[in-house]
Length: 114
Image (tube, rainbow, N blue to C red; front, side, top):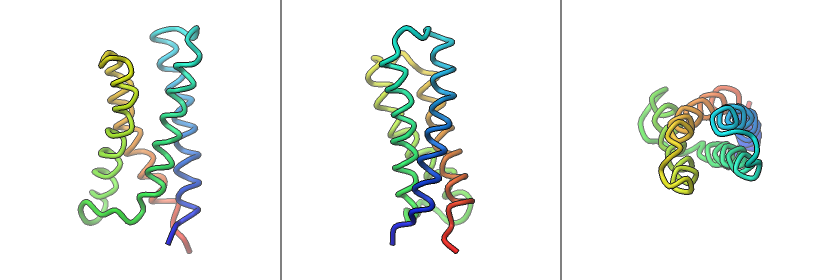
């Protein structure tokens, strides 16, 4: 069964973290390339959606599952930006892995159906 609450929380968390990505990337490369910055934000929103949908994916048991699943899905989604920058935007790639863990933690904690 799809957990709409978890999906919404994942999307919102991804959107919020995407704003932090825009700030971080903009501080490093400038804000002139706003299409890239929007793409960065959108990447984090997609990450939130994917993690929101991943409620029943079990990699391991317990709290470790949230950490590993979030890191793995963050790595997969962040790879799109990393590849598109010809493997140059290393900070955004690793931030995406960390953001994946954060999104999964928040979605798992607050996205439970009652």
